[in-house]
Image (tube, rainbow, N blue to C red):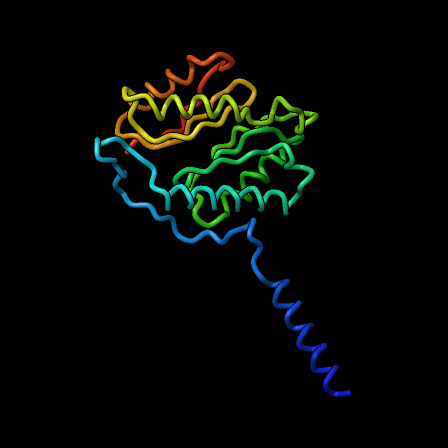
Length: 198
């Protein structure tokens, strides 16, 4: 009789250990792999290295997970994009206090140095107009990447006709060129520049 009890206890401990394993969708964010210097390619253009991009992704996932765990219904219309410690919140919430709460929650995440709150207030935050336009984002991103006249590393978020640029450049002129380029796409009403110049 003692043997089955031991087996059951062992199985119970395995189940508890599995339940305590960190969720893969909510990665622990450690210190950013950033340096004060920008990373450059062989032609001297600003690039974002893979470890830095992975870190950005981890911060963005943690921010989204934190919002969903706090109040999935309130924040279902919120999208997140991270770059170099700056987290961009786009989409919509129904109440001003939810907007403030989103800022507080995301701002408290390890590794987040700045929250860019671009959330709209809407009766229906889940309306398609607040969903990122992935197709247009990809077109603008690919155009920036393949344009030798524009220096810098960028990511793009497009919501309701507004293009939000995040990235890193060596001059304000570079950021202005990128914004002007994005502004030239059909469907873009205006561009919000969240690019850091270092």
